Length: 257
Image (tube, rainbow, N blue to C red; front, side, top):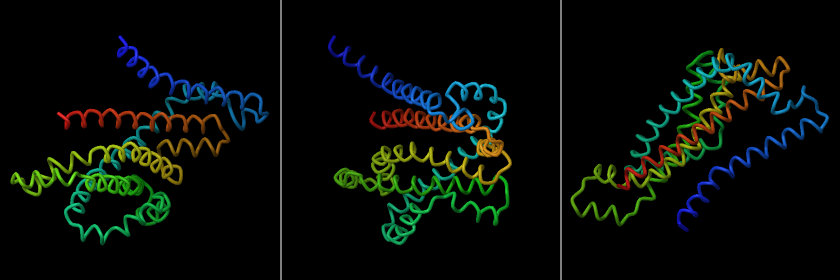
């Protein structure tokens, strides 16, 4: 009985506390927009944004398709590349030491800073945006995955080696499972990076996407539409985070079995 009560309380905390947090944010937003004197032309209320979200749904939903395709395509390419290079660096320490300064440098330069150069080199369209998303995702994924591989229990590696396992069998059965928690932590964060880089790139110069919808809303002096775009991006980021968390539970449970 006590165990079931504890479980119910835990589930309640996991559900109701986040709901209460978001509810508090909406209440604060409403109070500020109502009593601050800023006016709807500066800070529209949550209700106004909700109405705009519904009324503009055909417009932003059409733009959302391009953003989703770019985000997921760029993320998928960077994930595959990070997995391949991560394993290679783990098995070649000298190569890892050679590339380490570049990996550190990559964490200090936001990917969208490169977007103007990519526009000059590749022109407007799908390709420069895709490259920005890949750059934004690749290095964080590579760093977290490589750190996860490095955290493998050396005693377990020695045990498999003593049983006659080959190098790649150890990688597949020991090092990769050990790196999964770090990899999924990187996935949850990097999906948000991918979406942010995509939307910012679209905002700076693209023909379609949520960033274009946001830029047009800004140029038309419509804060309700700007906040609508921000709301859609936030909800999409939250969805990505939750999907990554579900996949993490599934994969880790499968490996534990």
